[in-house]
Image 1 (cartoon, rainbow, N blue to C red):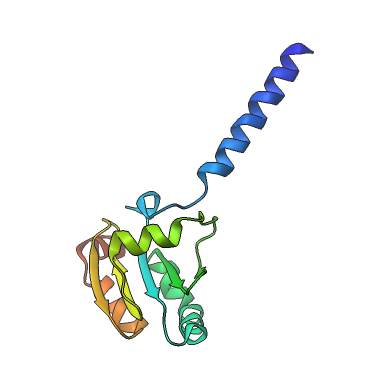
Image 2 (image 1 turned 60 degrees about the vertical axis):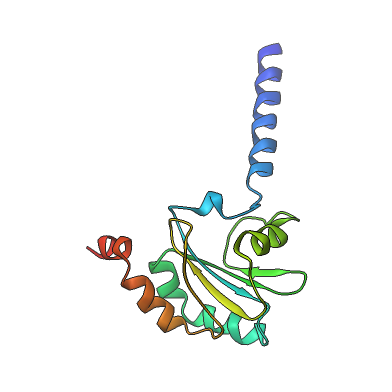
Length: 137
């Protein structure tokens, strides 16, 4: 009975640690698995959200996680939780300006930045990348 109690406490501790580590603080845990599109403070966040949702098939196919950063919240297709410091960490790390669209490759480097959200153009940029070419093959 004592061993069962210790096993329960151990399992409980593992699950509580897992939920804490699931908080996304920055993009380091997404590196090498996902490409990122960050839209910082767009003039029409609802329009950008609809664009992302309308291109969901291409987004999934290209392993894209997108973030629409508003003043105090982030809209995203990321399935986990964001930490309280996530937005400030990202804005500092990539020095994001208002109304910018940033494409970050799987290696964590900025691949393009612009002021308009053109999902098809972002897809073309991604499809021209060496790593994406290998994924297609």
